[in-house]
Image (cartoon, rainbow, N blue to C red; front, side):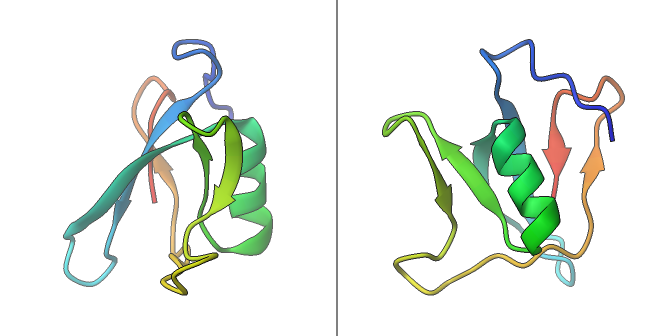
Length: 81
């Protein structure tokens, strides 16, 4: 998947949706490393703009987001997980 990280200072909006209900669970941002880790581990990683670092959703709360599928929009600058 060739994504365009050039539009938002190296970040992509990442919309996370429940695979059964279709309900949007959250919206975060991914840089290329967060996207790579998400693909490699099957758990959703984000880049925190306020802390300036990667984070694994659920690392403190235990409420992890597991990847079922990743899609992109038509111009590859946003992902749906």
